Amino acid sequence: MKEILAKLQIDEHYYGEFGQQWLSNSNIYTLLNEPHLFGKSKEMTKAMLIGRYFHTAMLEPEKLSSPEFSSIDSGSRNTKIYKDAINEQGVALRMLTKEKEATDCAISKMKSNLDFYDAIYQEENTFEVPAVTEIMGLKWKGKADIVTPDILIDLKTTSNIRDFKYSARKYNYDSQAYIYQQLFDKPLVFYVVDKLSLQLGVFYPSENFLANGRDKIERAMEVYNTYFAEGSTISIDDYIHKETL
Image 1: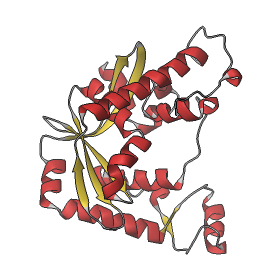
Image 2: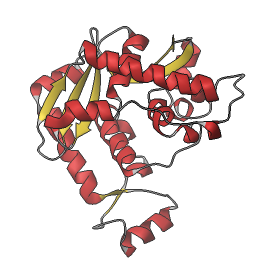
Image 3: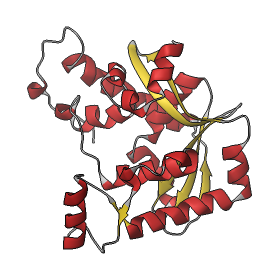
Image 4: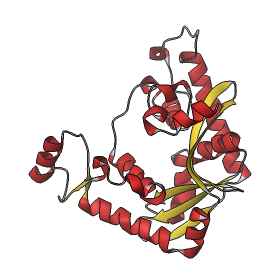
């Protein structure tokens, strides 16, 4: 187990072929909404890139020299400046300078708050910690942002902190909270910064929130076991989305 976790500590293995033997919370959306895309690689999106930059700056700043975090000083991704830079670098996506600067403001806000700083950076904490377990008969993995002696802290950004309780369900943070509490046997708490207002928030999952997350996992597992599990003979082409209105 130590060897497995050490390997999963490395992003190349966690997100690569080795890590694909486990399910993760990111699979929930695909199985429930786009099951025909399950198991297929996804292109990096702007939100994913900015989110990766945010987490790296908060928890692993020594990695910020990576070329993927360089930015292009362009007003949009439709300009010649941006397209030329992308072609020259041979990549598919880069942050715009204005996006990086806005994210830096959110990072600075989170780090400058004493309560947040003390909670995130207390000496006993460990960052980017992988874990694996079995849930509902299948193998799952997760990588916690911050493991403290008592809780897990997950860092999030939002565009409207007052609506976070709704967006948290939309983006499957409820299933994430359930999975991570199974992985680490600790409650998960969301530490959030609003990218626009720079307001901070701390959100504690309720029993109802966790139950909703468990329900999503059960529905996702029904799809997985029907179409993708070893021995399944039903083609995903025969999938029909069913939902109670």
